[in-house]
Image 1 (spheres, one colour):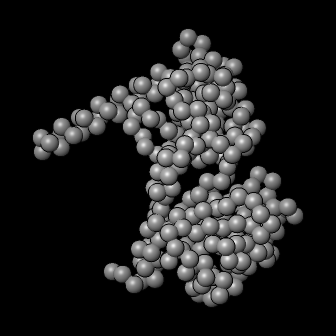
Image 2 (cartoon, helix red, strand yellow):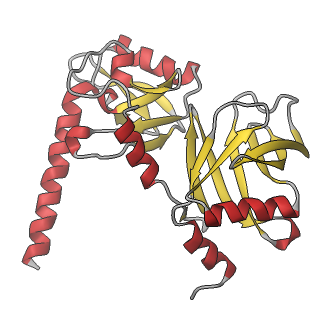
Image 3 (cartoon, one colour):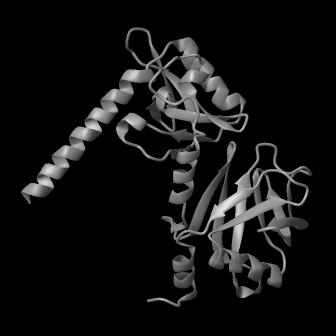
Length: 262
């Protein structure tokens, strides 16, 4: 019991130190700096930020999906704060996607800090992030994995699709929606899955875009890749960025979904 109390006190002390040190960096800034940061988030339609505080002992960035953003008076020496999802954030420890790289938010609005990385694109850090990705079950009991592509998260879901088989559905949001506007009728498009060409169906409804293997053999192939390979790479037939999904934890959760384990 004493050991537990000691651990709790140690963790609380570390947490207090981390929060205190973070708050001293760039949580309270000038109104001009706060306004510029907010304009970047809203005008560029930034949907995801990465939080990384090396001085707090973080080894991998944490994702923050933006639902609301604003600025507010900090009521301290005329300074202001940037508020995301109802919580004031420290610009020193958040990164936003710019030209394919994750750049420090404080540095982006010309707040110079010499003790935080300017970019989150070091090879070692990227490897740690990749290794930590994995499938899990969220509160709604969906088997889910999230992959970030520049400013928009792409979510992979394991669910029951056509042919009464388990299928993997990929979904994302686009500010402008699909090219032809709102369309709930699936359209076929080819995509590469681990360098094999597979026919996918794409459904667009408003900002939500969902795509999945269009035939039973294609569905079986995609599932087999997630079950047998360490990662699955998707790429549009017309080219563009690779979407690399880890298969960490997938087999275990797939077996639970099919009732093969207790």
